[in-house]
Length: 382
Image 1 (cartoon, rainbow, N blue to C red):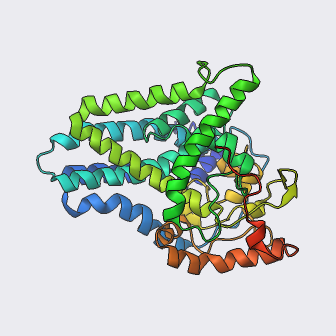
Image 2: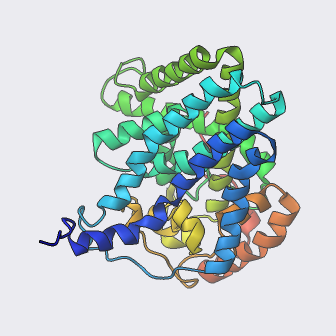
Image 3: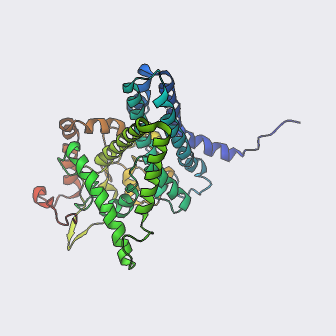
C-alpha cells in the first residue's frame, strides 16, 4: 500500500508561496560561523544583508503583483509563523553568542566587536522589523513577542511611539520619525532619538490622564518596557560578564541605527496637507515612499510596501499592496541600497531631492512656496 502525503496540496502551495519570506533565517548560521571561525567570515552578516540583497534586487527586479485581500488566517499561517519563530531564534542566538564570544580565545577584541555589530544588523534589520509586524496585531501574545524583541535592543518605547505618534502624525511636524526635506541623516538621527522617546512617554501619559490615572499607574507600558530591558541587561551581564554587557550594548546601538535609517528613508520630504486649525489631511499612499523590489521585500517582509502599511495599518504583511508611481512615490532602489546612500547626505540629496520636488508638483501644485508651508504649524510639545 503506497503512503500518501498527509499534507493537503493547498497547504503545500501556501507553504511554497511563503518560503521566500523565511530567507531571513539563513542569516542566523552566518553569525555562528563567524563566531566559531573568526577572520573575514565575521563580515558575512552585514555583507549578506546589505550587498547580497542589493544584488538580488538588481537581478530579480520588481514584484508588482498584489495578494488577494480576501486571504484568511489559515491562508496566512506560514507567513505569520516566520515572525513567531524568529523571536526564540534571535534570543538563542544573541544570548548564546553573549556566552560564547567573550570566552572564545581565538577571537580578538576587534573580532568580538564586529560579531556583535553583525548581530545588531540582524536584530535591527530583521528583529525590529518583525516586532513592527507583531505590534500591529490584536493578538496579545504577538504584541508581547514584539515587546521582547524590542527589549533585546533597548528600544521598547518604539511600540508606543510608532502606534500612538508615528501613525497618527506621519508627514507632519509632530512626527519625530518623518525626515524633513534637506534634513541629512546625521541631523535626523540625534533628533529622532530624543524626540521619539519623549513623545512616546507623553502619549502614554496622556492616555492614562484621559482615564483619570497618573503616569505612575502600573498600567503604563513603560514599566513593562523597563523591566524587560533590565532583564536583558542582567542576562547579558550574567552570561558574558562586563565584556558581554558591552557587546550587548554594541548590538543594541547598531540595531537602533538600522531602524532609524529605515525610518529616515520611509517618509523623507513627504508632507500631509495642512487644513488649518491644527488638522491635516488623511494619510494616503502618497505619504510614504514605496519600493517593489522583490528580494529586499522578502528579507523585510514587505516593509517596503510602506505606502499601503500607512494607508491600511491593520493589514498583515502578506496582503500589503504595492502602488504605481501615479499613486505613491517610488524609491529608485530597495532599502539596502537606500539606507547605505542615506549615510552620505550629498549623495542622498542628489538621489532624492528632485524626486521630492516632483512629488510636490504632482500632488500639491496649489502650494507655491514650500519654504513657508514647511514651517512648524503644530510643533512638538515639550
